[in-house]
Length: 337
Image (cartoon, rainbow, N blue to C red):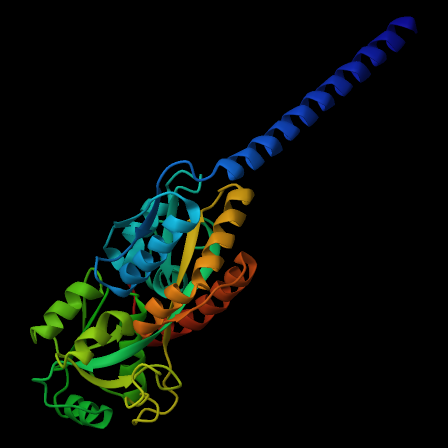
């Protein structure tokens, strides 16, 4: 009986000791997490951009990165890792240490389209990333090389129907919003056009300027400069309303394809597992810079609209977008290995 009581007492003392150690360890983890956030960042931060330099994702990342450098007190570096519709850069960022020093500029393509388009994904858009905030909503702009025989939506449709398979449209990669904007146009206008994917919109625009491809449904920031210089013809915008930056350019819907609407968006992510205090600090910094007058001006001049929200709001938005674009992918019949 005495031995049983002693054993029980020793067990109780042992359990209490373990509980105490666990409590101390837990407090230590909380303390270290809080300390990490307080010290963060103590070295340069990298934003992985999954498309080539000069495209919309890159332009937005550099504007935001410059403002974050001032806000965070550390250099913010843009690292372009193009290919596979954004999947190469996405896979790299997903596998990076979850410490807040590697961020990812995601898009509607990387986080709402590719999972439905690619049979094998090198990362899980939902499980492998912690959403921070959307940073911009961007209209796509249907542009043509001036040498092409069409200058309006109706002329493009008439030419495409008279010449099946002769109109080729470039994109920043398979599964990008630029690609699916074209697929949506093909479906609704009932025309046969050929898709030519590139590793980012910048090289696609280069070929468009050289008349190697006829048209693009490009993100406005990478196309607008060439429209303003007269090197590309603006045919229509893909959004439901006209763009304030190009008020004389009609929407595709009003120009002859009723019901057409496509909008690109861009957002900032951290690898999943990044400490909550660091995520909170990053979200606060991003929301602050996105509401700065100078940042808004720079992004608006590109034909884009700044946007900020909570991580929870961004996560819910991504879920809804995944459903919407998943249907478009399915209806288009597009599928990639």
